[in-house]
Length: 155
Image (cartoon, rainbow, N blue to C red; front, top):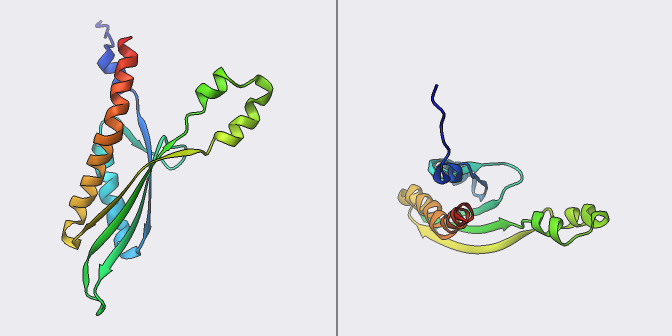
């Protein structure tokens, strides 16, 4: 019988970032964007796509760009990054027991605005644009969170 030992790096991979994707805009491209973004998010080893109680929210508004004569010339994607307010530390450290329920209700759906990006490109580059959005989200936000988690395990 072999007993496995869990190392810090294995323990860290158990942490999952819960990400919710919300895509709105023109129906003609909404499905493609949802598919491309979800595919890229799933490729990240520690991301789980959720439909409620996310830690992070990617909200994308998509719009086809066209000339006055209605010839399609590209797409514009407006992406907002939101991070859910972590009220657990607040509730456990600073709030009396009798007030926890009301503070939970008041803070449960709070998010902090982290960033807003506007990507504009051709229809042919839609998949590449979606890949870049996820790569930027990973590099700019999740990577820092991973490092913070790693520090916690090292202490």
